[in-house]
Length: 202
Image (cartoon, rainbow, N blue to C red; front, side):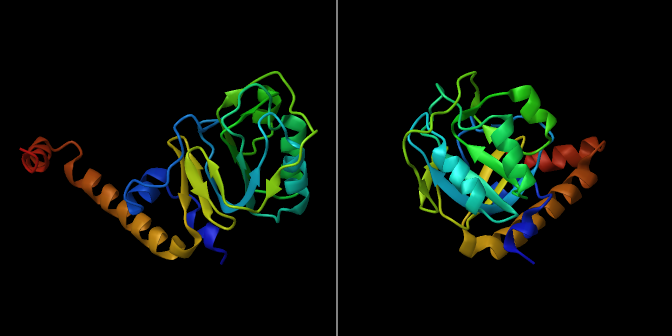
């Protein structure tokens, strides 16, 4: 099994807890659709602000199951992609796109039902005049991302799991899922159990 598959369906909150609250992107990087969940191996892209030529190159070279993680320099004046480019990534089997930049054609992009996490939208198209870099360490949303790191995203945000820690983080995240479920079952609807839990913090 590919390491990114270990994180399918696991909430980012539990992944974050397993990482002790580190490696999460800026809260501005959000899914365009609240119910999207994303997991995949990072294919990294660094672009000059307002440019997207390297994004197209990355879509061509990335493998199915990978996630384009694009350092857009937090630029909001030109889009890193629109519905057409997003559709290209979807057709070639990528798992999603994450960027600290913005996209355009938001309604048609959401209609594709292909996970896109970004800062927001703009009507302005990206330029294709300057080169970028692919498969190099980048900073996206305030977090270092290396090629092959595991990207996990949902409505709570995006977490980056270092590739070499994938199995241990997945194990700890699943343990957190289980403990949260058991705690909820134990105290839900039980006032005395709630008081007992709260007394630990008095």
